[in-house]
Each structure stands twice: as structure tokens, then as C-alpha cells.
Length: 216
Image (cartoon, rainbow, N blue to C red):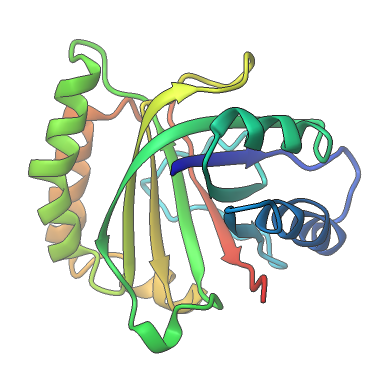
């Protein structure tokens, strides 16, 4: 199975709530109905919450759809008939923290952060640092987090897609939990910031707070 992460931009002038419904009904659900395909979605929060202080302020996308299927090309071809402005990536994902099974059908918020590696390291070194050094720190200091996924970009599937090296997804039970328990302490915030700067180009990277959509 091929996993494809899709970053979508809302049409100009389209309000948050209608766009979220559009992503669910016109993109994620149709993709999930394709043969041997599953899909999940993160859509804009009604409050349009900004990323927490200290994280990238840039954001070129408004929603994310996660699709797994037998053919990445078939996923992108199907998507092209559903959406006009999107970037698609073939990824290899590590799920390093999984929420409780009884709460696995959505309902939380997700900090989605597509990142570029810092200048001076190659993609493999970026991946190794993210996996081996940063992940244990994130699991230790992001104490309110109930899910943590690192998606390493293997290939960009659309010509205009920004060439991100990875896409992080940090899940929280609620916006309040994200805002108050992203870090365990000031020291934890400092440790995460210092380590992130070793392998992520924060000036070019992005972050958005989205809401998990229920597709069932």
C-alpha cells in the first residue's frame, strides 16, 4: 500500500465551515470509497487557531487528507478531479504514539507541520535526527499529546508541491490541551526549540492547527 499525504488550499473567499464540509464530502469520502483505499482528513478549526508561539507562522494549506491505496498515481489522478489547489506527497510514516483505541475515530485537534531540513544536512541525516534524537524528546516534553506521527517525504507527486522533507502530525484531545500542555515546562520548550533548530529550517517550514474530521 502507498501512503499519500495531501495538503489542500481553500478557494479564495470560501468560509471555514463550508470548506471543511467540502473537504469531507467532496474529497475525503470519495477517496475512501475507491477500491482498496482508506482516507482520513484534518480540516480547519472554526476558530481558525494559529500555531502556538515558537512554531513556524507560515501556512500555505488549509486542510490535510491522508490516503492509503494500491497506487499513488491513481490517488492523485482521482484527486485532480476533486480539487484544484493541492500538493501531494508519497510518504513513509512512523506512528510513534497512538491514541487510546476507544478514541480512534477523530474528534481531536492536530498540529500539522510540513518541514524543510536545515541547510548543511542531507535528507537521510534529517530523517535520522528526526527519528533517533528528536522523537524521544518530543515524546518526553509534549505531555498533552495523544498521537505523534512523523511522515518522511519519499517523493513529491505534484509539480507545484513545495519540496518538504517531512510532515509532522501532533494530535491532542482538544485545543485547550494543545494550548496549555504542548510543553511540560519552560525548560522542555527550550530543549525542543534547540533540537529542532539543529535539523529543521524554521524560516521556511510551516504549521497549522486543524481539526480531525469524522468520515464514518
